[in-house]
Image (cartoon, rainbow, N blue to C red):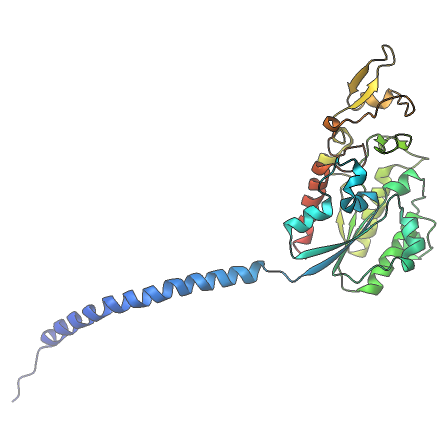
Length: 306
C-alpha cells in the first residue's frame, strides 16, 4: 500500500511560494492601480463640474447698462454685476440688453425692434424707473389677460411672451428692483430723485417689487428678490450724504435718515457723494462695486443650478 503524503508537507511550501509571488504582484498592481484610481477620480470630478456653454441675455435698465459703460459712472464703478457673474461662472457668456433709464413700458413698446437674441437663460431686472415715472402697477388680471403696456403687469407679459417665443425652454429669472437712497446723477446733479423710503404718486417701490415677485411665483419662474436683501437696504445705499447745514451753511456728512430732511440745491451745492460716501451704491441708486458684487453673489447662487 502506498503511503499518502501529508497535506501539511505540501501546503507549507505552496504557501511560501504564493507569499513570495504575491508581494511583488501586489506592488506592481498597486503601482498601476493608484494612478488609475486618481485619474478616474479627476475625470469624475471634471464631469461633475464641467458645464455646457450658456448664453445669458440680461434685460435691464441703467444698472445693467452701466456694466459696459463704467466711464459714465465717473469711474466710480470698475466691475458691474454681469462681469462679476461671468468671472465666477466662466462657462456663461452675457449679452447686455440694458437700456439707460428704461421702464418695462419702454421694453414692451419696443420689444420687436430690439433684436433680442436667442439665449439659454434670461434675466429681467426692471422696475425702479417704472416707480419713479409713476407707471401704474396694475393687477394679475392685466398679466393674465395680456392687457398691453399700460401697467407693469401688462408690460411684463409682453416681455416674457417675447422671450418664450425665442426659446420656450430657456429659464427666466425675474429680479426685483433694489432699494433706493436719494439719487443724484454724478454727471448732472440737476437729475436727482428722493429714495424709496416714501411713496411716489401713491405707489411704493416695494409694491413694484411685490408685483414682479407675484408674476414669477404664479408663472413658475425663478425670482431674485433684491428689494428685501438687507445688505442692500436704504441705510446701506450710501455711508453719508454731504450737505450744507441749514443753520451754519457749513458742509456736514449726514447719514440716513437725517439726510432726508436736509435740502440739496444742485445749482449751488457740491456733489453730495464723494468717493468715500459710497456704500452699496455710489450715487444713491446705481450699485457700487460692493453693490454689484452682492447682486452677482445672489445671482450666481441661482445660475449655477441651471
